[in-house]
Image 1 (spheres, protein in one colour):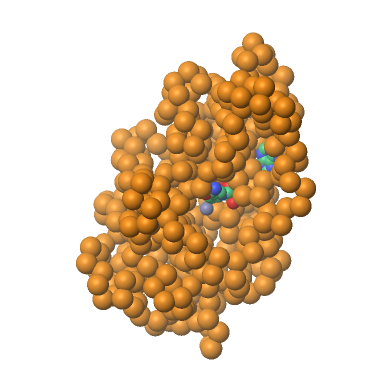
Image 2 (tube, rainbow, N blue to C red; image 1 turned 180 degrees about the horizontal axis):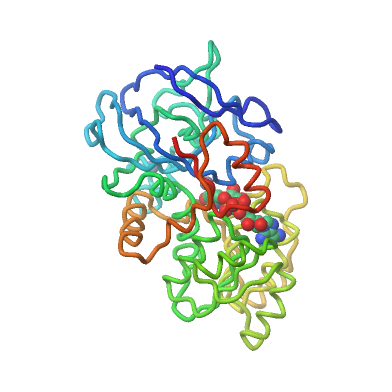
Length: 370
Ligand SMILES: NC(=O)c1ccc[n+]([C@@H]2O[C@H](COP(=O)([O-])OP(=O)(O)OC[C@H]3O[C@@H](n4cnc5c(N)ncnc54)[C@H](O)[C@@H]3O)[C@@H](O)[C@H]2O)c1
Ligand SMILES: [Zn+2]
Ligand SMILES: [Zn+2]
């Protein structure tokens, strides 16, 4: 069949919205009519080359839609089911999946190739050229074919243009606070960078009982939004937050620091560690450029003497099959704000405008609606 997709043909080029040829799903695969896709910063890393995935690629990994066809052997999904995609597939059988770490499923190792999990080939083509898929999903398209391991079935009454945010930003941000940082009641928490990920780290920290949440962002609009999501204080930089935290905590500093900037910078890790308390934990959720050369700049003496921790977190260190339905339940009960995350919606054809707005700091999340 024919559909429309936003393709990145080379780094430092705009997204090109084109008609593509989409094959029928093979065994273990599902054809989905996508309703909406969030515009996460991780797709921007494709265009800058910070994430060096195989090109040409259909971008997008934060999507939700309706099942239109299932391949042989897919027994638990049927036509008409609503699904959110997990940006890492979860097979349910590998050591990570079977020990409660679906975010680290072994199938994730295939991500850089961007081909189908089943046989390493492509279902998406332009002429005789095969296209790869961001996170093996390619949600910047009106239809896609993905592996069943990437699909999480959701209830049909949740609006898909909000549910799509659960495919990456919400679970990643919320889990960075609740699981990776392990925020406890009474903690002082710092969130560095208030985009789609940081806004949800703030919401996670609030729900986990943080006493104070200091949100850091150079953009004034982001700091205002941070207060709506539950921040108690804001600062425009980590340098500005340092004396604020010293004052607020009587010098004991933050129990948890969550890094959710647009592009990670190893030279700033020392500053983040300096915001952390004795036994404090710094969580690195933001993506650093694959070829970042400078490494991390921090005091390892401070690490030892203050027993600080520095940990990474992928997909909020969560279990998408359990956490996506759980967080949709919190949305339903009015405890998790999804509506306020969507600053502006765009047509697929306007995707480059959407990413320019992200670069300009205008959006918490821009969402493509098909
Ligand atoms: N680990 C994971 O599983 C995972 C998943 C999704 C996204 N990410 C990464 O998380 C990061 C954030 O993604 P997003 O979609 O929220 O991005 P975004 O562009 O929407 O938001 C980033 C925010 O960081 C702010 N910022 C930039 N420099 C800053 C600085 N020096 N100090 C404080 N704030 C600063 C920007 O103003 C912006 O508001 C990206 O690197 C993305 O690739 C990681
Ligand atoms: Zn993402
Ligand atoms: Zn697995």
